[in-house]
Image (cartoon, rainbow, N blue to C red):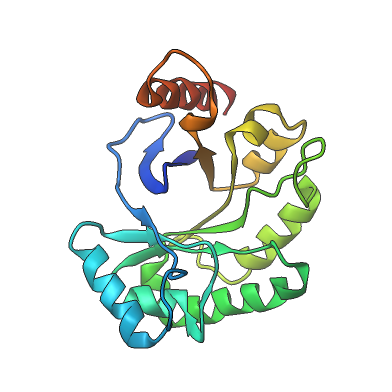
Length: 206
């Protein structure tokens, strides 16, 4: 059963099965970029604050300074949906290795891992072809227990709806992440209405 996750306005706010329309599970995207000094203590202070309101986080990379993002979340008893960052090709191997090592130590904490974020090639946009992304996805799959953890990728709604091979990518994922930015769409609808319209479009295409 294919699942889709929608990320909008900086918050990962809806995780629902398209077929079953299960109730949403609410989490939040987290990065430590605002911190002048990234230490274990400052990271755990952030996790403590997050845990008051959310049960899981999504990250955009596996390393927070010298610390593994999975270790950081697990130490605070939070679930984590990490993203294997593919933006810098020279660092892809280290990102995948960081995921695999963190997963070995804390597999209970990782329900979903996303491989890549907004980088599917579509006309003049994006770095990677579908086949390249599927290659990275398979490398990550080799590290996970499929009964414990889903593997997918996060792309803009534009790519999921219009990229020629997007559905080939989706069909090879357990879950897909959808970045939706209502404020970039010009219309008379409210932001929530625009978000709902675009989410309905995703349901239609997937």
